[in-house]
Picture (cartoon, rainbow, N blue to C red):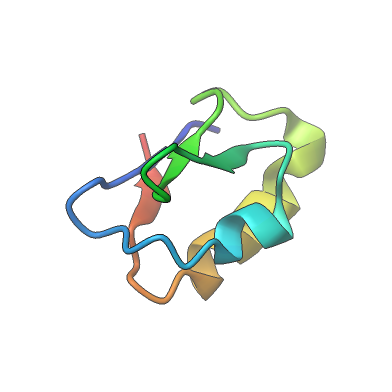
Length: 62
């Protein structure tokens, strides 16, 4: 599984970081980004939850 954050949609709510900090982080500007596009299979459930909970629908498959 690969994941990316759409820079144009992200508003920096940080929900994804709260759900899965192993995969997502906030930039110095306060917007989310995926640390690595390739996701450890053990984290796929948390990543899917982050995708579903993103208020801006900014997270999706890479």
